[in-house]
Length: 361
Ligand code: UD1
Ligand code: UDP
Picture 1 (cartoon, rainbow, N blue to C red):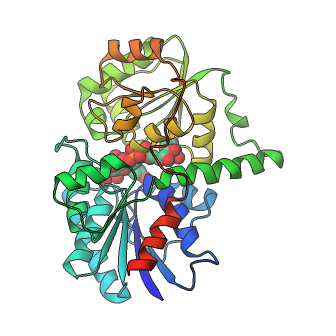
Picture 2 (cartoon, rainbow, N blue to C red):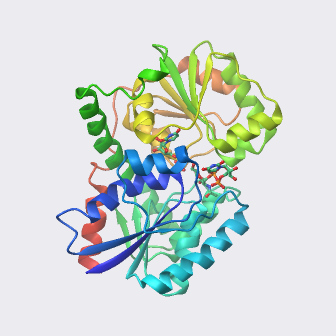
């Protein structure tokens, strides 16, 4: 029996762990792998953390470090200290990290220093913008990892360009597994008469928006241009707002018109349903860009570059930065291309990861 210590801390990591942690505990795999789940505490509000564990039935974390709401250095440093202590105590055979957050880097670094193999899920993504904290985190994590589980062909070739070829496996995108699984959960809930969005009394047509990327929230000029575009839209907008963005909008005294419906961050099941009901999606989120693709919705991305280049090349995603005119133009011309390629696998990414680990480990 191999002991995996999985590290999560931020919202997108809960979504990814929901799939893999369930599979590790399933009848098929529970005799081969045991999982210890560690939550760093990077995200800590009820609707940024607990709601995902509850609604997605993610196992309760075995270790909760409660390290959140801090600057990059302090957060990453404290995580490094406490994850190292947890690893010394638990002595796992493998540390599994997801994505590109400070929790990812702290986990990978603590493990690598102790010579514990690291598996990186969602490896090989690059924006080629080294100012992004996520780019710094993912480059370092890929170079520390023993196993790089890549979602796409592009990710594999990005790693090759950096000389990483050992332990690289293209397995598909685990967020696609999550979307397919939870769409079924939503369908079952509907059959039981549960409608999670009923209380919101949504308009019949709306654009779904999320904004949280540091480059947009911490640059007042960009934040102002984005809110100006949302205010100028002729359509209703639904905007579940990340706490960091709410804080910045409030501090800057920016106002959103009534057709921009502000919500608290919503749980994953609500979010997937909002995506499916929306006419198009405006976002700076990595995960939401892909979910727009999974849901066959046009995506307008509030960034100057993206890691998910396939969505752009295939015509499903348009990069507009934070330029008001470009945002409005992209919305008014948004179209649904007639076809979609399967860039992100077949929804069996989690199984492929465990198969690779079981074979080689
Ligand atoms: C982090 C990740 C980013 C990811 C995002 C997912 C890093 C460097 N960034 O960004 O890659 O896309 O999570 O959402 O790891 N806050 C709260 N309550 C919470 C969480 C955050 O109020 O539950 C506020 C705090 O003021 C906090 C700020 O948001 O300081 C930023 O949170 P942080 O975790 O540092 O970064 P995110 O912007 O969430
Ligand atoms: N998400 C959610 N509720 C929200 C906003 C996002 O459940 O209010 C989900 C979204 O569907 C996706 C994940 O959170 O699965 C993406 O996380 P986020 O945008 O915070 O981070 P990123 O993917 O940019 O790292």
